[in-house]
Length: 195
Image (cartoon, rainbow, N blue to C red; front, top):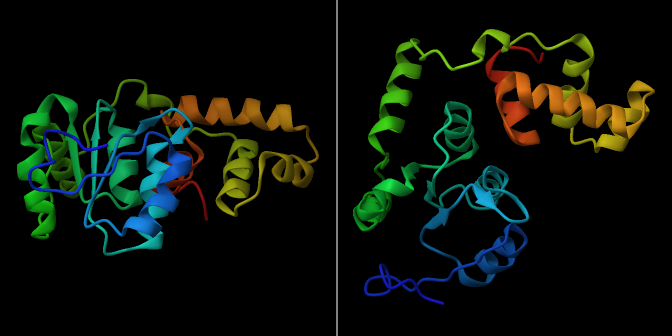
């Protein structure tokens, strides 16, 4: 299925599920990927990370409604080279041209956030007073996930049930203001919580 917005200049292939991305990119070899972070069967940040590992040269643009600082930074850390909010959809064709020229297209709010991060003056995020206050056990759980362990394997390592691990994960997500394992690990690394 082609998108009318892009069909004139691009051979567009659309997938709606994270599980379909790897097969399509292997068969189709895209020049650019546009990823929404809200996918029905997974997290778009995980898709960005997987595509970046599979093809580091592939320009990836996030096009989403997700405006939370943690989501934006996690997507960029995972390998996205551009980040547009859906309210800026009118800039999509220009953003794709910029990506293909090696530029980094971003919505104004994203560019401002990145600049603040570079300058070391990150804006205060609501609820951020609890960030970085993970318990020792929560850090052990995140460290296990960073090592590629499943919830069950982390539970076995720590001598607790899988349900207990899920409880720790929910707490970590709340404290770090993230919504995926990848984001939790990246944010914990950014905050210096993991050795």
